[in-house]
Image 1 (cartoon, helix red, strand yellow):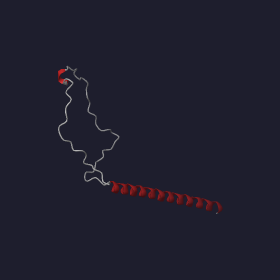
Image 2 (cartoon, helix red, strand yellow):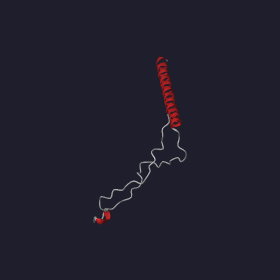
Image 3 (cartoon, rainbow, N blue to C red):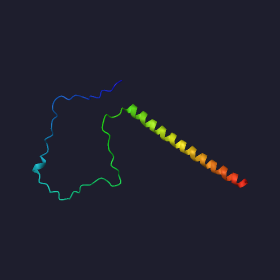
Image 4 (cartoon, one colour):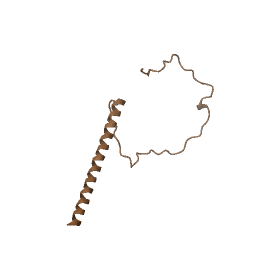
Length: 99
C-alpha cells in the first residue's frame, strides 16, 4: 500500500495571536558583544558535494553492500598473503636449521 505523501490541504488563513504587545514598543538594551566570523576548521578537508539526482534507497543499499563486500574480500586476501609469507619464512628458517 502506497503512502499518501501529499499531506493535508489547508483551507483558510491561520489566525494570528495578537494578545501580546509588539516587541518594538518595549525598550531593549543594545547588543554590544563582538561577533567573530569563524572559518572552517583546519583539520577537516573540504569535501565537494556531488550535485545531481539523489539515489533511490534500494540502489543505495545495494551499492553500500557491494562496497562492504569488496572491502572485506580485499582484507581477506591481504590476510591470506601475509599468512603465506609468514609460512614461507618459517619453512625457510626451519630448512636453514637442518642444513
